[in-house]
Structure formats: C-alpha cells, structure tokens
Length: 509
Image 1 (cartoon, rainbow, N blue to C red):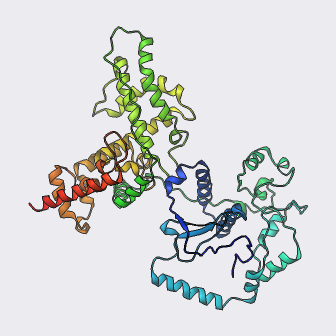
Image 2: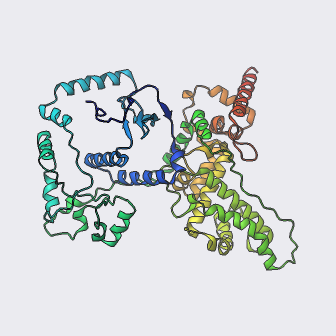
Image 3: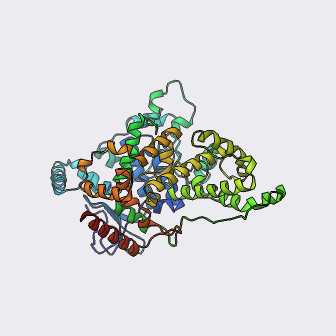
C-alpha cells in the first residue's frame, strides 16, 4: 500500500537515500520551552500506565497535530524517521537506539518472515480496511445523543473491519469521544465549566472523560472509570547497599564517548564560572547600613542563580532531564555568599564543625534566611535549602572523580543523589568512595585494564581504585579549563594522547 500516492505536491520519495540527517539529544528538549512542555505532557500520560487503546490515541494525536503539513515514515528495523516539510525537502532524524525493533540480522529475518505470514493470512475484510480512505474526524460534531450514550458506545467500540468500513461509508456523523479534545467549534468552549475552559483555551487535552465530568449516577460502574495509577517506587527504596550500588553502576556505565557527545552539544561560548565579588578587610566600626551595602553584590548573584528555571517550584523533577551545571553554579554562588557574610557579620554565624555539621549548618541558615527568602521568586525557603544540598553533592562528587560529571544530562543527577541518600547516608557514600571502601563491591576480574588502573592508582597516590577508574573519563582536564570554559576537541585529544603516553611509560617500569 502506497500511503503517499495521493500527495500530488510531493515530488520526491521519502525513501530517498539522499536526505539530511539530524541527531537531536536530550539537551535539545531542555533548551526548548515548547518541546519541554510536550515532553512533560507525554510523560504524564505514560505515568498513568495507559492501555494499548490509550497509546493508540496518543500516536494518533501526535500524527494529527502534524496535520497535512508534515509527512513522515519510519522504515521497519531502523532507528530513524524520514520526513518532509511543506517545501517537499526530505530530512531524517536519528532516534534513540531503543526505537529500533531489532538489532541483528536474525531478528530482522524473523520480522520479515512474520510480516510475510501475516500478509498471506490477511482476511478480505482486512484488505478492504487497508484500501478504504475513511478517516475518522478528530474534531467531533456536537450531537444530541442521550447523556449515557458514551457508556453504551464504549462497550461496543471493538468493530470488525467490515463494520468499520460500512460505518464510514454510510454516515458522516461522529459521536463525541469519551476523552475531550481540542475545541474548534464556535461557542463550544463557553458551554464548559470555567476550569475546563481555561485548559481548552490553552490547547491542553484534559484527559477527563465526559462520564467523569458529569455527576456520577448510582448505576455507573465505579471500576469502569477508576484510573489505573502506576505504583511509584520511592527513591530510597531498599537498603543503603543496593542504592549505593545503583549510583556506582550509573557512574561506571557512562562512557567517554557519551561525555564527548554531551560536551559537543553545550552552547558556545560556555563557562560554569559565576560572577565574582570581593571585599577588602572590613573595618570593625562600620555601620550596619554599610555592611548591608557590601553584602548586596554577593546576595544578588546568589538570588539570581536561585531564581533560574531549574530551581523554581519543583525544579528538581524535570522528567529525566537534569541541570547538574546549574546546581553546581548555585552552590558556587552560595559559597561566595557564605564567605562574604562571615566577614561582614562574624557574630551571626558559627564555623561548621565536622562532628556537629548539621546543627551548625542549620544555625547559619537561620542567619541567612532574612536576607535570602524575600528575594526568592516562585520558590520558597525549603526549596532553596534543598537545591543548595543538591549543588553541594554535585560539588563533592566533582571533587572526587572530576568535573566531567557536570556534563551528565540523564544518567545521573544531583537531584538523584539528593533523593537517594539521607544526609548521613550521603556522608557515608562519598567518604566510602574516597577512602576505597566501595572497591570491594566490584568484581575487578571482569575489568580488562585493571593492572593499568592499579599502576595509575599508585602513581596518583589515590586511596580508591574505583575513583581511579572513574577519573579515566570524568577527570577535569578532559572537559573544563581552570576558568570554567569547555576544553576544545583538539585540546582534549592532546590531553588524551599525553595521558596514554604517560601510562605506557609507567607500564614499562
């Protein structure tokens, strides 16, 4: 079946091999507000464990939204989609590897065999369905059907192919679906409840059926309309050892090549350095107003970072897209604020001791709060403190294994570290990582270059073989200059070659 045979304006075939290929990644979603909103809506649908029918509606909605302006096709067994725009230019987008149905030739042959057997066994009704040009309307006409028609209609929604074709040929009347959609008919929105009007005007599918919007009758089935909620597994589910091993595995699974790709997608010019402010030694006899004035630059820098998008409201939960560099910068700004605050108001803060760290930190936060909280927008003090903890953990991890961890966008985040460990558990994790306690959790016999790692560990005087392994890819010289700017590709190659040569020389002794 040639689905493009009626497209007169399409002068080129979508299967043409000469196409321009795009390879978007997660950061592209992150930097586009519209795509990020779409991403969240799709994730919201998937979190409710949708049925196959609901997934079919999701695919239909996406295709319908593209309308007649964008034509596309996904060749079987490939991880790409080919599409053309209104100018009939052909393009290709590379999908995540998981989008491909098969990865080797044996799977490909099974698909071909399966497809041929299905085609030969197709019924006449199925062939009629493929040949029909019936297209159900997604913009339903407003009908005067009985109020309970949706219930009876849904119970007979499974039609045979012949019935479906006959229905399409006999009538153009389309009943209102159970799920509300976009509102294109005049005065339609005004007949809806006020809250639903607001969602409709924003173009959002409310996912609320007519049956649930009207008052429930005693004859309605409670089970029929009850949404199926996907059980949530807490981040701190399981014992400390299992959560510790999960974080270690996430760090070890990321490859140097993955980090190179992430670095190539960073905006140019880029630096994670923040605006610096300094004060000279303070005269102990200056007035409070003068102290406030001297504190303002550091306070402004801190609140500017805390009011950025990742830190607003529930900014930590970004549906799989994380802001590790933003949290790192926030903590840099917080450290700068702490240092200057201690110079200007030494009697209001106390040094943080190792034995009573949480108590001392809470006491200092009480001193900071009157200064910071009034300047927070779309956030609150609890959210600010949480984000500071996230940034602190990213800072500590970067000091241990290298600043390459800041490039991670999906595999691991500071928010994941915050949600996985309590404060005491995090101290145990990072101290165990640096001291080498977690080396025993890894089967080093399966690591091909373990001898080389052990020699490198001795040369670096590092206590942990695991940290030595992680530094092989996360080490700061590969990714960032001392001023926070990105290392160029050529310079990274030079550093890599020099490091490899150093290891060769080391192994010769």
